[in-house]
Amino acid sequence: MGCVYYRPRYTTRSTIQGSLLVLPGLTLSGHAEPMVSIRLVCATLVIPGALGAIIDLPVAIIGTYNVSFLMGAAPTTFVQSLLPESYRNSLIRPNESIYPGLAADSHPIVFELGREANAGPPLLNFISFEEAKIQIPYVARIGSSPSKPFLYKRHIMVDNAINVAGSWISFGLNTTLNTFVPTNSSNSSSYDYQVEGVLKGKIRPATSGSIPVESFKSAAGLPWFAEFVTCAQHFYNFTNPVERVSGTVELAQGVTIPVEGIHTVASFKIAFHDNVSKRAEEIVFKTFPQKVLTLNQKIEQCSTSDCALHSSSIESNTDATVHPPPAESEPPTKKRRHENGDSVAVGPAEITEGGPRFVGRMVANHKLRTLHEDLKKEYMELVDLCDKVKLWVNLTMPKIEDGDNFGVQIQEEVLNELHRAQDSGYNLRDAVSKSHHINRAKICSKILKYPNVEDYAIALREHDEKQFYMALRNLIDLRNIYAVLTDVIHKNFQKIRAPKGNNGAAMY
Image 1 (cartoon, helix red, strand yellow):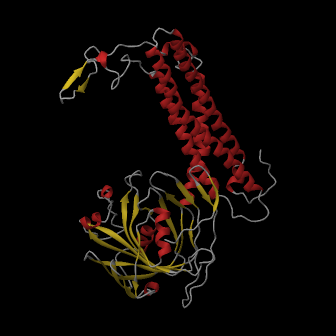
Image 2 (tube, one colour):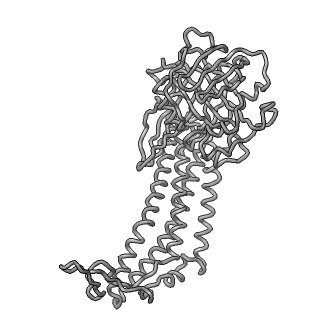
Image 3 (tube, helix red, strand yellow):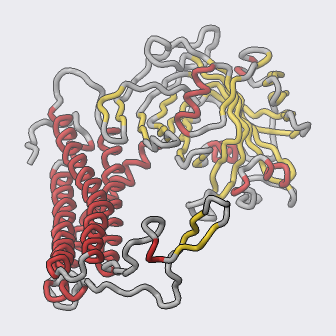
């Protein structure tokens, strides 16, 4: 995993968007292997704690990756010990064609031993580093299909401190700074080396093996995950010669695993961007139009008398009655201490503090509360959907350069529309959760204090009536927001997807 660098484009409430950086690469001195591209399309940074922000960092790294993909079997109990506790019962046994002769009480472990060269960002494109990975293949990921296999990245070792931070920032990879002895030894198909304190590898060329070559390629290309919820997938280009290898890998736990595999120089890309595009297009073409239809149906239902938002049923939903306290409850008392140290119970008539001044009880408007809970879910869904579409639009933005920027202007207008929609969701959510209950409680406290003043009871009914009316207006606003987003994005979809295309089309 290479390092992550970004240049902020602009900052929003909880998101920092970045522009794509394309990094130059140099040929690896002393080696005849051809230059290949390594492209990390996108990364996600989750900031824990009170900030709770999510930073989406589109990045790119180009370099040379000289690697051995190795696979061996270890006792299932040992493999389970390398997994997080929640995944220890999630192993999927590969079929016989993938790993012939795998023992019933064993599970594969995948090792990736290699070197990335000239993989740094601009002005640091001389950075090269050794890299080793311990990975568990064929794991069922929580939240995905139980039959879909994933690759769990248990431990990443590199000899460059910048890449330690970059790997964690990108995907939550457990990456450590280690010493590789001898340096750069894994560049060929025959090497003895060790990652100090973690593993020792002894790899030699092989003429044949029991595991098919395609099994190593498919395991390397499994979708993978680590500590973050982010899931990604490598797509390798195995156009360069592939050489069979075999040997042993000894882990620090004292376990020696016979391995076989392939050695090659392979280019790859991490397809997080593709997943974002697929999800965003599904939202734009399916979710948004469906939300317009669903909300429009709810609005039309409000014209019938059996709807909670119909004017004929609003007044009956407000209960301005002051209910007496439960008969079995004891009046509040407190003890007063005398100068001699004795304490005496004081009756309720003598209490001036420590208990409620008015023991009557008023109930909330439960129909209104249920309605607000439903609306809050709608607001939060709007914010979440806008986040996903915003990420997609930002990732389709080209690098900043002169000329032919009409498509980028369209993208920025669409982003502004998404920002406005998201701000509306935030504001509506805050209004429901804060102002309604505070204002209603103030009116109720006046009714408890002055039960004979009829205007306070009328004020409570007026307040509830206004909340029902505003709920209907907010429902209409939500429908309109989804309709506008659908219209703008559909009309400009080609320019959003390919902003550097033909500029003849107008925006609307």
